[in-house]
Length: 270
Ligand SMILES: [Ca+2]
Ligand SMILES: [Ca+2]
Image (cartoon, rainbow, N blue to C red; front, side, top):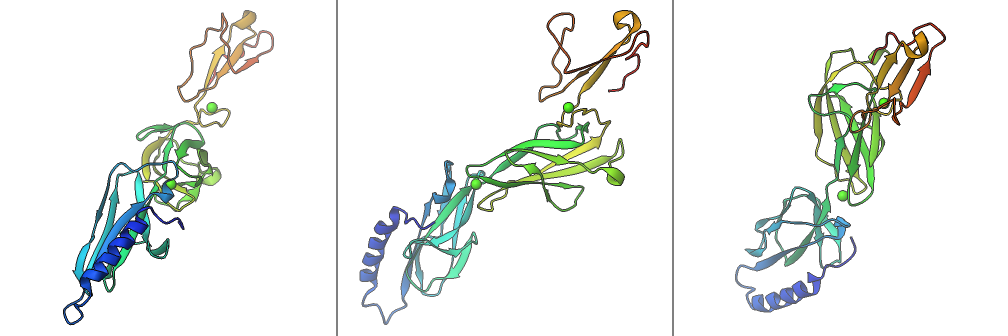
């Protein structure tokens, strides 16, 4: 934030010239110049596609002026900084509205807005795990991913770029078939928040055996080895459950084998 933008010296030259122009006009209404610029000190590796700055001009003394910086949807303006002092924050407001009483050079600093999303559930989907998991990203370090349930307060998830959030348990466990709204957002170290994502979901049967957020599949083979029986657990992932040919090279992540003649696996759920 302390780095002077390149346009600093150029604008100081303009200010000097403007002061010459307005010399000798002390008996008339005084006018001052407002110059707006921008710097991307806060953008890290990010970039800005579209920027508009409005408010630069020459105004009568005391005029209420508005300095406004607009950028594409992936950026936010962190505030207006004073070029002459080399980077003092003048106002975090945008637009910044003030009365112009002296020649003023301000520059806006833009920052990337982080993103966040869930990966094991989508809007309108069925929750089949005790966890919501997702990803988030930004040009600088993420400080937190936060989740809120049904209009409650946001609370921190575990992790940031890959995160998980444990759904209510015990007496607060969601009832099967009940409808809920999830709010998800992330925040970078500079304090910028992502947009909020809202997912409307229905509580289904928990099929997540290993607690990784993805529904798993149990399959019984009760006549294995003349009635000994087996049960297989196939673990789900981002792409669902991959096809497996157990007679060839395929395998289940977990195989349970029963005792002789017990037809283990004749009834499985999930
Ligand atoms: Ca950022
Ligand atoms: Ca799982």
